[in-house]
Image 1 (cartoon, rainbow, N blue to C red):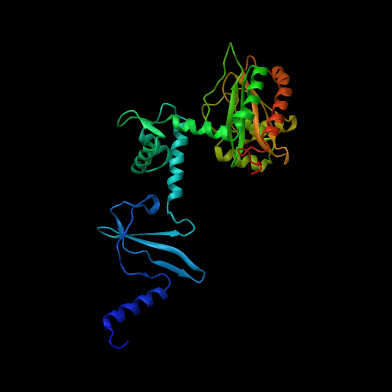
Image 2 (cartoon, one colour; image 1 turned 45 degrees about the horizontal axis):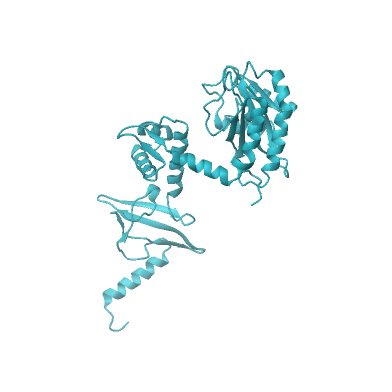
Length: 349
């Protein structure tokens, strides 16, 4: 244009050229307050500043954002798909949940190094995650350098969720009734995301030997009656996949636990033929259990399992035969009571 500064004209032409090049920087340098997050997520309040937020264009529109972070010696480039604008938030959540799940299995707590090494998270990142969880009241540390453990806030969340989902009002009374009638430990598990998760239990033993194992949330399928009861409802290929994911040769289980896939498939086939699963000293030495699957009222697909377990001196095969009708009645009652509860897979929302 006449009268226009040739330098300004050149800059405007260059900017238009860069936009047309599909992937070149499309805006001039400018300091934008932002910060470093896990995996490159954008967080406010950091001293770091990004100079560019160039937009990559395709024929279908914006495809991704390229963020260049200046450093003292080099530029670090990160890319993110715009389907998840908060880059790295998924990884942050996965790690935080992983820490909570790990600590839930260790009531006495764990030191930072053990948490980091177990979950394969860098120790610096583990320290930041634990600090955030501590600030939110989910973990505590008695003293600097001491073990981290979960607080009662996690327990309160669990109870609150069970109450809101109807488990406390509808399911727990049925478990309590079965425990009273059998005089043994009753455990219920639900199927979630190709896992069997312990949901609730009730202790029926009032005297003598008391069986109350320290169990994690996820059921170990290969050595438990609940696990065998669920596996007996599945095709063999799916059984092998689920067990392979958990691992078969584990230490710390009973002397009669299956050590090979062939042995496990024998247990599963027996449970399939009988319609229930019996185990003797597979999960823990000196204990036995019987379990059945809980089937959805509409789908007739398994939605969970329920078991009765106790010391092997009381839980003989004959005693299990007497318990079986009560166990099946409880499974049917639970299926009917859980038909519209959101915690079960086929609930109506």
